[in-house]
Length: 117
Image (tube, rainbow, N blue to C red; front, top):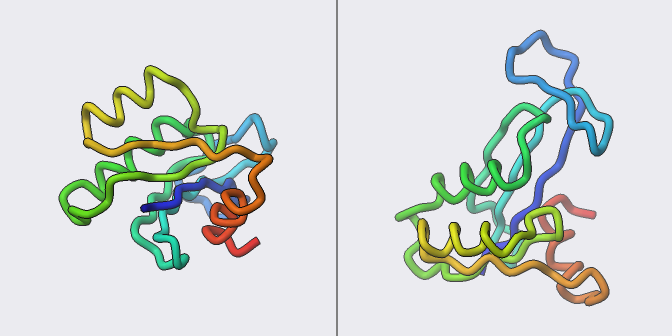
């Protein structure tokens, strides 16, 4: 099982990979990170901050495809929600994307492993 989350961070560099995350009001980059249940990194994708959650998931899953044959399910938070998107993930990559219930402390704790909260 994988655990997926994203984080927008400010950047001061003059790089072209920079955008504005309107939800968090951050100008910079966004990192999409997938870990295993122990918190060990499986994949990291850096994009401009204006990249949407669903597009970021596609990039992460393309990075993971073929590298972890036993990976069958990934947990994510509610920013990655959408029934049509779940179907696309399953048909394209063969993985189940499960959205965590924020009321479930254990599941939310697993997501926090990604960024060390």
